[in-house]
Image (cartoon, rainbow, N blue to C red):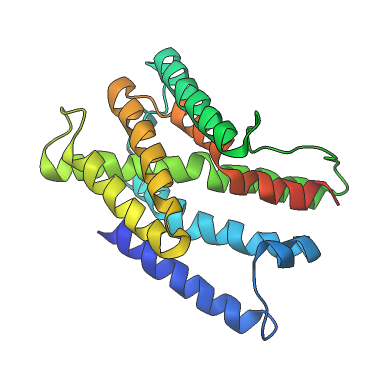
Length: 221
């Protein structure tokens, strides 16, 4: 409950702070970020603080094993193979929608003009890729503990977490929340089957278009 509440309250709190700090009328949409790439730090830090930080602190405070949350060698091969299948299906559906083969990733004109942009781009990958998956995996595992359903593949922890995650994204991304919920349901099932989260982390990093939008903003100008 603390993690869910902080995820909701933390975003509102950080947004309120940003409204007070940024010039009046400022927005953090893609156009504004392209005009002022240094502003990318705000959505990236918001994602780190409001999404991944608290689960990581709980793991460190409780001295839990990283393997509990799928950060281990065991099951890695199967995790990578199944995750690659999810990526292939996603790319196929994306290509059908676009009418041509596409991955949604555009790295044309990438160049490193400053070290701070590169560091921020790497932080964007961490925040919107592996850390976001860790957030979901942490919730699945601990909700399963709450409902004593860890032994089941299609468990209460998995279903409750994905449902709530989808609902939260509905408020910010509308119908696309259904796509996000479907992707994370597949990645959550892979974690449950293999007990390895590395494959899902890499898969979501590839599929999350916002990462590549931020990379394009930071490393093409």
